[in-house]
Image (cartoon, rainbow, N blue to C red; front, side):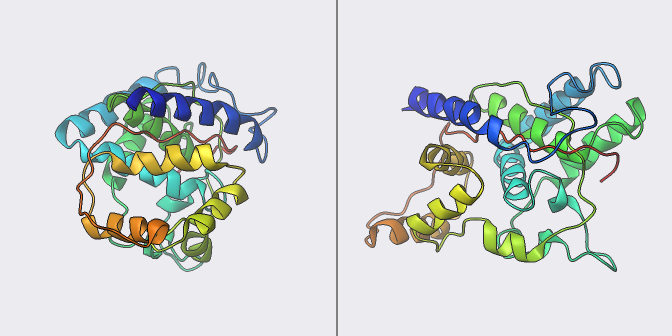
Length: 242
């Protein structure tokens, strides 16, 4: 089963990547070598800090994956989930899918701080999220992949998009599939992304609700801990600060 899931995720990533370039990074599309000259050790910095965080708390891998997932389902993979409320912004952190459950922000802050010391105003928070999701996947035994880089960070958030676009525990299967299709994803992507939620621990009530909505009959309570993985996203965008 683990090998099958790894295949599904790898297939999902390859199939999804060509369709999510909603714009361009500078003079071209995203590409893995984007920071090779401007910040050549960027990926090593991200990998090192993520590894330290996951070694301290395994659950952090799932938390970082979930942040990337919830970011990409709202306005694309643009780090809008990291923005705090201000005079013109209502933070996505206050949405129903994120309020009280989105976590891992301190790890991203540590990564951003380290990158700013090494390469000031170079690596976008959106790219940090994408790399952290990939590294979390690898650290928990999943497949690796080259992350296309060069995203720009959003200067705005969408509370309504976060509330409406992210699949909810009480959604039916058809509703969840529809939300995935709106992102250019299919049922294979749905399986891979949903499987990623089984890294670490989760509240049993959350899974009972999901299972009930799919079958209408839940007979067991279960704590999940497995090696299912999240696919990576590749939406364009790069800037300089979170």
